[in-house]
Length: 595
Ligand SMILES: Nc1ncnc2c1ncn2[C@@H]1O[C@H](COP(=O)(O)OP(=O)(O)O)[C@@H](O)[C@H]1O
Ligand SMILES: [Mg+2]
Image 1 (tube, rainbow, N blue to C red):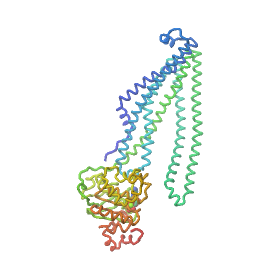
Image 2 (image 1 turned 90 degrees about the vertical axis):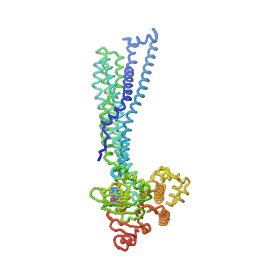
Image 3 (image 1 turned 135 degrees about the vertical axis):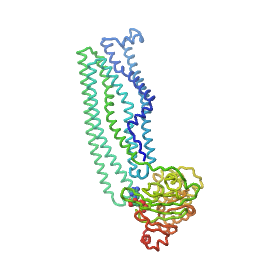
Image 4 (image 1 turned 180 degrees about the vertical axis):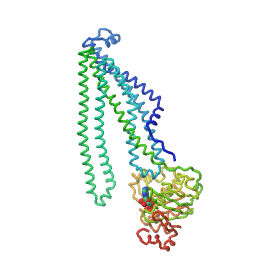
């Protein structure tokens, strides 16, 4: 038993480290861009001190050699304005480049996780997949992965930049006026924290609303899919009531959300503004009681706007980490699905042979602990023979068919092809040569042609022959696009009988050594079914064939019939012999409703 490696932050950070160069480049860019952005909020306000109040001349002194002495104030203002705008443009371009680098790294890590998950899912056994559910896999691979992705985006990209920005601006504030700077740096995180907390609360309401909406969607989806059945069983009223009830729940949740989130947003904004007023008052007091100039004070107000969001980003990291951790745990449940057993290709009993014998030895299988679906099945099916399996529904016929192609793994016992155990052949090789035709075939939303060949290169004659045998000729000829007709999702554009015939044609195209037909003609009318079996007979002649069927016509010809009940073979023999035995089989066929 090998245990699957799960995803962890350790692993994620290890992968981040493999992108050292890119991260280094991006971080260097971040430092440069932040350094460039630091003076911007100060530039224009300084002109108040220098041009209007004429208290200092730091900027003017530096500009005079460039602009020439004795210029009008207008020239200086425009020059500083141009500098500020150019610096902002450079800052934005560098930020864009750096977020492109960061995105490359974080998306690569997310892609890595997704790839490993898809790899694992492709190896999972059918049984595990059935228990897990396809819907859940979808939401894990999309929604939860997006949570991790956004955490990575925040952590690799914004976190470092936010910290650098806070440090940079913090240093500038302290340098301009350390008392006021310190006051801001202490109070600001509180405001950021509380506003963030409020935003989170709003998020909770939003999630609650989303959950109710998605419940409504599920309910609606199911009802629309089953609309036929709902009509047929006069359930419209129940459906209407259920849907309206859900819609009503959405209404209440939405009102709740809207009201509370608006109040919260208003409160959060109030807090922000109040903080701002406090800082402004502190600014004025600093001008009055210390050496802070008016221009610098206004500059500090400019920094207030810039420093708020990095604080919020840093705080939201903690939540993003929390969410990502939970998402990671959920995603890891995918690795709890065990992979299908992989057996080495030691022998290939199918190679160079037209067909093979099948031997089942003490075969046992259970879907769930405790209740056995197949019990001690021992059968010998000679190569090239025709075998019928009959029995009441729920007896275990389809289960047996599924085991023969390894959809499920036997609990104990052996399945042998030409005397070779499946453990020495490998399920992939077995499936290449043993074809199970299902009662409700799965079709891809693609052309008829694709569904026949499954995308493989197949000679035209083989396709034509398969169409002939499966009694599809006149149907396909009647289609304007012929073989290139799209069948729709799961073949909705075809009738049940057409789907079954397409599935039989697919089997003929696959040209297997062993054929298993599990009620695969149940939707055909008696005449078409009879025609099909006549056409199929020469194809099946030299191939071992197992037919699971209800209709008498399809089993009377069988070399051997097995009657299965409650997971056991209770009677066997040819048709005449079994009938004469006057046992369960005889009782079953004389009931008349089936065979
Ligand atoms: N995917 C499944 N998961 C759990 N139990 C199953 C599954 N498929 C069939 N069963 C159970 O196994 C038994 C045999 O079913 P099946 O092989 O489909 O019978 P048959 O094809 O003879 O009608 C039934 O009791 C059925 O409820
Ligand atoms: Mg069945």
